[in-house]
Image (cartoon, rainbow, N blue to C red; front, side, top):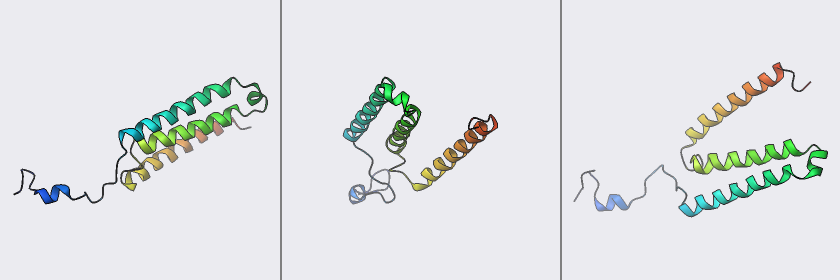
Length: 112
């Protein structure tokens, strides 16, 4: 017998086509712990003198921020589990923002 949605018991047990598995609460906690460790590493490298002397502070902070950005976008914004179309739109916007940022930096002769 079908319920109000028009689906019977056999339909309710069938997996949805086109929807990928979403992370469990345990995976969210694991990602949050990784983000906390990366944040702690960011704070720690600020206090290491040889990082400043070799000019590695900004590249390392950039690398850590890229790691954190990727984790947040993939898991907490569900781009890893949703349709690739959403990821394409997100990447197009990100590419546009990076392009605009580089144009502004070049306009102010930051790299000269």
